[in-house]
Image 1 (cartoon, rainbow, N blue to C red):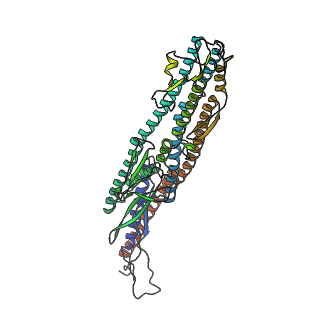
Image 2 (image 1 turned 180 degrees about the vertical axis):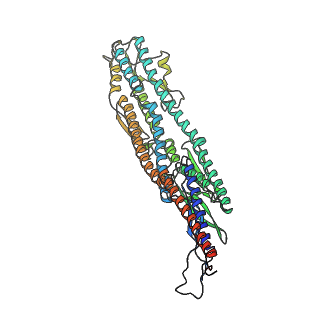
Length: 517
């Protein structure tokens, strides 16, 4: 039996239509080569074959397909590379937050190029040395006090700037980071609804999916997420894609951040210590996840705000470590010199009459009795001239000499000898005051360099992953140029097929059965 007359024309027409649509897709790709977040598209086609067969058949009955069928337009994405990229960007977010915090601390505690605490300690030593040669001279006692005041001013300034950094990070965490995450969750959920509605109407909404993927990448920089796609049946012959986003904590527990059009919300309390973070998931369940984040900017910021390294048995030296280390230095300095300035009681002629007299050089401005870099001040008795530096505590023949200077020399020695510095019973350094502050600087320098090295390595890794992903999802002019030639040739071939069929049909109609007329 002769094949249907117009079956070949249908095959050619479908081929031309498919090639033309493929050219449209190539044009869309080329037009969006510079569009951020755009994913390369392709035309999905399948062979159109006969749907049924005859009950009776023979070897001479040869079945031929009826051309090509366009089933849709899809994106070229690799889910594995997406998951790998989002995992890497979470780690990058953690290290980036750490490195940014260390950079701000370095502006305060790094004295490599500025005059600060260490120079002030040296100035105190020089002032005491001068006083030891001018015992009893009020002018040089005042000089020592002024050098001490300069040192205390530097302590106060460091404490204030550390507190400013803490408050800035806390405010940024609450008003920027948490707000951004909540906004991302809401926008992704809204895009889910828009994509679902478009798919119901037959539109794949690929551009909306690109927007959603960009938001998912951004969300992954804040905390570790897992993205799941599943098909949802809405009619016997139609399904749509539904997206769920989950957060998995360090204990392996899953929290649903986004479920179709539902989304969760983060909340934080920055009014006390530690700063807390809670999550109300898409199902309405609220959990405290402050210490349960594995990676991401949120974890890096909480590390800076809440962790103090060895002082609280945590794995990271955050702001608390450097605040407490500086307070320990100040407290030890104040205690040592207050004890050193204790004087023996004497009469008006300098005769020792028994007992001791407290003559503290330093006090706390909040009357707490616990010295910190923020509250230390020169004692009122020293400021108003009630007493000064105790020049001697070693009587000779029961009398303190007016020119004796053993205690002043002792104070100079105290500035140069070793002391034990600790926080809540945890010793972190043994050495002089000068060396203790240098150790704080060195510790910060090591932490900052380590964070920067890790950041550079992670940037290199994520760039490699991004390049691998772009090799699949990105638009290549060379490849699209080849596709233009390929689909143009296929269109021309399908058009030539139609011309050939037209010639054959013309021969059949006009050139058959005319012999002998």
